[in-house]
Length: 487
Ligand code: HEM
Image 1 (cartoon, rainbow, N blue to C red):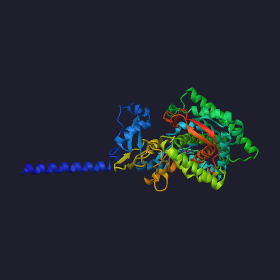
Image 2 (cartoon, rainbow, N blue to C red):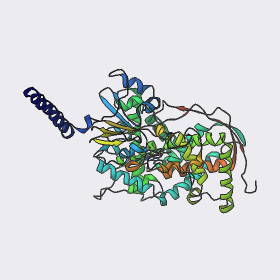
Image 3 (cartoon, protein in one colour):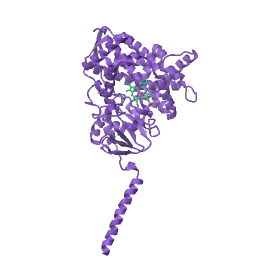
Image 4 (cartoon, rainbow, N blue to C red):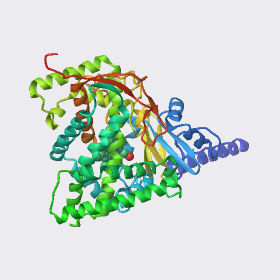
């Protein structure tokens, strides 16, 4: 009897201990230790690096089916947690800067953009500078930029002969630099200084290498040339700005908007800030747009159904508006819009977006699993991978612009952040309308004035580039024609 009661009290003590331990773990042990995301397997320390160097998209393709939409890659002492798919990425896009910030992970841009702008300044100043971008890209401004885009396209393609063969990738890259110079950098650069300035931008561009992400100030020749180019650009813009100010001249371009911008406390922008913001605009918009216009062309020239559809749309608009091509006419081009948007779904030039996390947070996957992500992790999401998720986009690797048409709207049915080529939420791209107008203006001109045929194989993806684009040449045979309403 005595033994029984001793057993009973020992048993009760055990149960009570387990219960107390459970309670303590529930209340005291940080949540983050209990439900951390699964970790990508690999050799300790450099395992993650080896996987990452093979290419982040290849790693995602291997790990997502095994681990799901939330997992951590250990890269040296860093934890990179991926949030893949709209079910888990909302926090990535919506979190305030105090929780998820860009400044640390995008620091490598500072030597290129220069001091005092964007990722070199506190969030409150950066927000004001992004307000300058927003104002410079308002519809009334876009209307005048479009006229310049159309004029640049007409001028550029007037130099093509009656027929011939060109590398479309090179041609579109070049045209977009010219257009960006006109709309963003201003008349002085476009008309007088184009060769000098584009050579300097070339050096800036070549100074942004994968190694620069980790060591932006490494004393290598490419970084040295980058720094010299930046100083020269700053001098060129200082002269232009001073001359505009002294002559009280005002132009219709982004440069003018930045010169006229004022911070909340009434302080005007400095010449160095204006230069830095223009460089940032060019870096954000130039490769991204030229890559997208090339992919759009490659897909259209390989898909008769959509080539005919965009041509038909052009004819209808010509019937309605004659030869007029302006902001409002471009805005009516829904078919062309969907064709560009689909090329961009399959090939977003920014394949990986990053944040640095400053507070713990939790996410629930579509399978209902909950994970707690501790602060201190780098948080990543990938437009290139998420834009091809099979549960969001039907037959995801197929070029199918109709997936965005009324009735299907695959980019919306699974909720916001299903289609993330332009990011979204708090830091969504401010140049999206500008980019579409520019690409539409170019393709409107090509569709109305040329018969085009892709003569090289369908292009591959250049995964090694910082802004991921088209590998090799995209050879196109052209012949002049005049698209007429009665054709
Ligand atoms: C096809 C063309 C373009 C693509 C695919 C693209 C893509 C993106 C993406 C993915 C982001 C979000 C980055 C992140 O969340 O970390 C972004 C942000 C941004 N983009 Fe674009 N972009 C394009 C064109 C442009 C153009 C033409 C401009 C300006 C002229 C521009 C200006 C910006 C700015 C200022 C931001 C920062 C917004 C913020 O952080 O609040 N972009 N872009």
